[in-house]
Length: 188
Image (cartoon, rainbow, N blue to C red):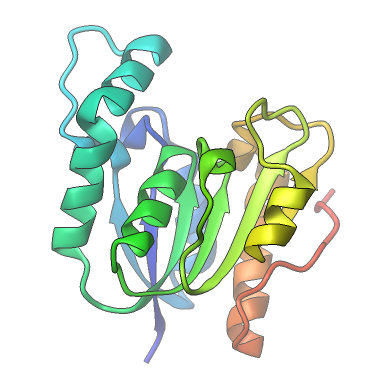
């Protein structure tokens, strides 16, 4: 039986998330995948979906709605692969009791303000130019594995090289039953 992998999109969900199909393509034959669109989980309805409006809607209640929705939908201990807002949703859900085997979060938002971590293996990946990424000291204090990828910003998860890197890390971790990031080079 395949390991269960819950995937949470970034704040745009399927609206601007064609890149997510690349992850699913690599991973679907090895994992039993459950996908959540973070925008749908947040129940945000806007007339104008600008980055500013979506961010504001997430911060003014959408994040809490998504968190509650995820907690109500997920009961089975699973591995999590998350992107941007999805990483923050999963992190906070785990702190509130969501059963989690591991969390791989790419560019999660506002984690630098957290002072506790989920009780599972946590792997974080940030681009060098991600403005609010946590410090190495923060990662060490919380005992999370964090890698900073040079020459990338917050949306590094949509780049083909990162998609391959993250997918390979997940598959190697599955084979070794560890699901921890290795500092693999980017695929060229």
